[in-house]
Length: 351
Image (cartoon, rainbow, N blue to C red; front, side, top):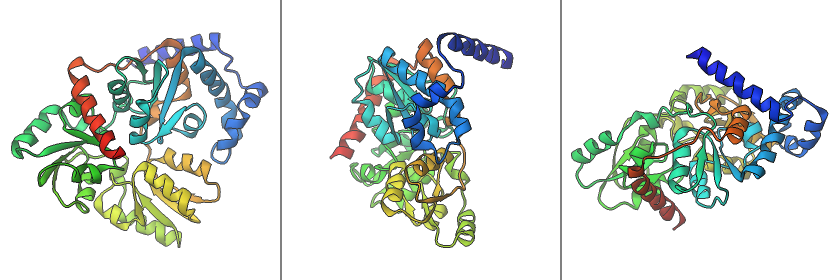
């Protein structure tokens, strides 16, 4: 299996080298100088020299292929700042996916995000640079699990995080993201709401909601690893540091933080408040991407890496654009009900 995968990678690399100038060069550095200016504080120049030929090739090829690159905040800085046309958290990407004019979408994120783009754009081609980019949270639940919860709580609306498969979205009444979860829950009829699949997000929302919330005990491998003890140690080592956390973190971590918010909310908090030092309790690349935009803020990084997000690279983005692989499809029976759940979320958010 390894040899087969390695052979495919070598073949792809050889073909790309035959079609594009991917050698380190002063010309590639000149052509990408404006982009490097955005990330020079977080990407050393020798590293950018390696990235520059790929960044140049991708940005040129996008126009030729009528393609747009959507990138999640957890993408590495050379992707997030170098080749993305639309960047943001799950909610932002879901909303922007409905506005895409290009015929081809390159989804730089994990597989459920590419499925969401396909759900919202069934007539467009959606490509993911590496289909192995999965999600431990999304894979923790199935539509059958949701049906069992419905049986246990008759009449309760099912609110599912967008970090779920198309199958699970289709089995849900409405989706949510970390930024709008509380508003979505409060907008549902009845006294009891079922939340899936992130148990920590559900518990953190339950601490603010007026409704009873029952939940599935899934978790994100990035956020579940943080502990309150760890954060207290950072406060002791860095007096005056501001700690901001994502609501996918355990409740005791959220209680220890100075601010809790969605990915977009955390970014805005840093840009608005400009703390001298900050700990962003989330995925590593997000801190790097925000640091590139706020050079006056010192980032203390107790971050965790998402191995699934890190499967996406400049090299496989270029190959995806060049070859038209790997295309994401959604079974026909999931398209309409999943789209309805996502669109309901967008409507509640906009209202």
